[in-house]
Amino acid sequence: MKQISRLRQSIAQGGWRYLNPTSLQFRLISEIAILSVLSLGSVGLWTGWKMQQILIATHQQNVEYIAARFPRDVELYSEMLSVKTGLQKTINNVSNPSLLIWVKGQDSQILAQSDSLRAESAANTAALMSLAEMPSQPQVYSIGDRYVVLRGSSLTVKNKLLGNVYIAQDVTANQQQLISALQGLLLVSALAIALTLTAITLRIRRSLRPLQEMSQIAGAISAEDLSSAQLPLNRAPSEVKELAETFNLMLSRLSSAWENQRQFVGNVSHELRTPLTIVHGYLQSVLRRSTNLSAYQQEALETASAEADRTVRMLEDLLDLARADHGHLYFRQEAVLLSALVVEVAEMTQRVSNRQITVTAPSCEIRVQGDRDRLQQVLINLVDNAIKYSAPDQPVDLILEQTEQQVMVHVRDRGVGISLQHQNRIFERFYRVDETMTRSRDGTGLGLAIAKGLIESMAGYITLRSKPAEGSIFTINLPLWKPLP
Ligand code: ADP
Image (cartoon, rainbow, N blue to C red):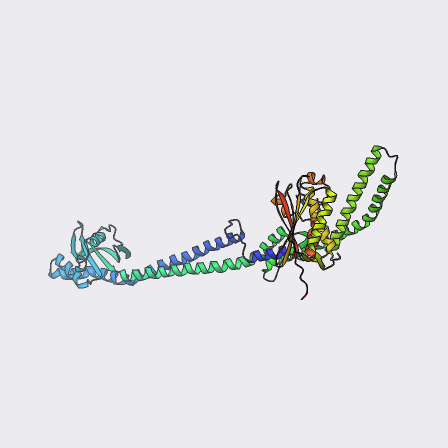
């Protein structure tokens, strides 16, 4: 249960891998980003092109009008004056500071030009002149830092081809307005894309969260959490909701299957314990009373008796676990003098095992709230493990510590230790680190699961620190008993 709420917390804090290119979120967001850039980009390009066309059309009329009138005016003037003077007079008549006009003869010599063109810098004039192919339809050209709409057409006076007339209208101000409008459009589009993407990212994240929760819960779920593990459905979109509902139904089915299995194990343990205890009793009595047994018979009976005893103990453990699961394990909630209990357990286990068990404790009396017999059972279990999984010459230490709210009992050995990969699972039922190694050391793999269940029922918890080949420290944390004021 705790594990699941921690999990939900971590999901809420956003443990999502944004940058995983294979994730659905990454793909959706990048595809939407590309589509937005493409669609808004093409709208921008089209708008730019259209505005440019409008700008050209605005000036085209004027340029076309001048170009159309030009040959007639030259013809009129040249009836009284020379053609060259007629050209210049016509240019002077129409030209203004923003209109550049020049006429090139067939030999590419300039025959006449407007004053405005003369006033232009040499570089701008050269750039204008160098435009080899003058457009018959007006077009926008960039000359230095200026923009002009340029049109060129042949000039025929009195049915004689004189050369070409070129008319350039300065449109710098309008072009700059157009460019800044396009820049504004670009900026607004970029902002719109950024805002849209942020909104879509948040939406997608929310929509996909149930999927993520599902995978994390499925990965972290343990048998104990099954009954309480359910996905929250209120915020999920309907497509994901369907999947989440199926997932929840599956969890419920698993939970009831697990419950049935537990009940079955409890019932079987109960049914087997009595006959096996009787078998063990008979075997013990035969062993004690028979004087004429052969060595083989003696050994066979001893093995059978030891196995029966081991199985009875395992069945008792299983019954304890089944009772704890159903909340039927009876606990006394009393003040337990833990400092005395630890010393008692140390003396008892030292006597039975011939192993040195040291106790380090503060001189004051330390009491915790709990059940004395169950605490003794847990301590014996931990010390028994410490003895089993360390060399015979290594002592086992029991260290008692007290803080303002808590009491800690450390059971320390210098034995085989437990590698990190096993440390998370060591408290699971029937979990044993190395089958071949632990089988030989007599055990069921239930001791730590029971110890954890018992301590948690007393509002405490067990932790483990261990290093392979260096040893392990199992720590029982219990709330300090405080007398009522
Ligand atoms: P078992 O009856 O097998 O000892 P436990 O539940 O008490 O069952 O322990 C589970 C497993 O944890 C053991 O099989 C052993 O591999 C490992 N273990 C427990 N205590 C220790 C310890 N002090 N040092 C090393 N390994 C341990």
